[in-house]
Length: 161
Image (tube, rainbow, N blue to C red):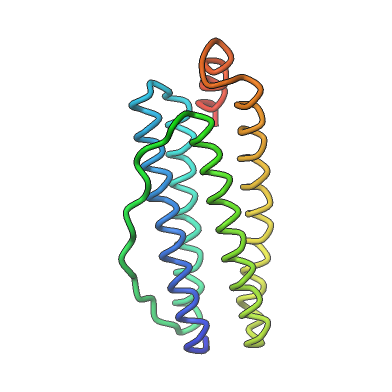
């Protein structure tokens, strides 16, 4: 059985994961408007992953006798200065999520909640991958710039995700 403290924290993380999906959909909308369908596709896939992450927490909670209590989501940003800004914000957001996962893991350790620790190990590894992907795309964008043939080529590459 999950402690009330862990239930509250996991409910908060479900909200954070769903907000991440909402943010990536907002970023996809920006990319669509900027005529960057590959960027939009990448962001839509990212949004789907975030919903999957929320569901992992949802299932963990229900399997352990906890109660999922969904919370309201804040409106995500809708304006971005450029494709580079888009991925700077992506990396910043993923680093924030990493800190949330680390805090949740620390709580699971404090609560002697071994099952949640096992789940959170997966999320820790996932966040390493998420940050690495965003970092690589951002580095490529900084080399390529926000206009020109290189941006078109990167857009096509992101469409292949």
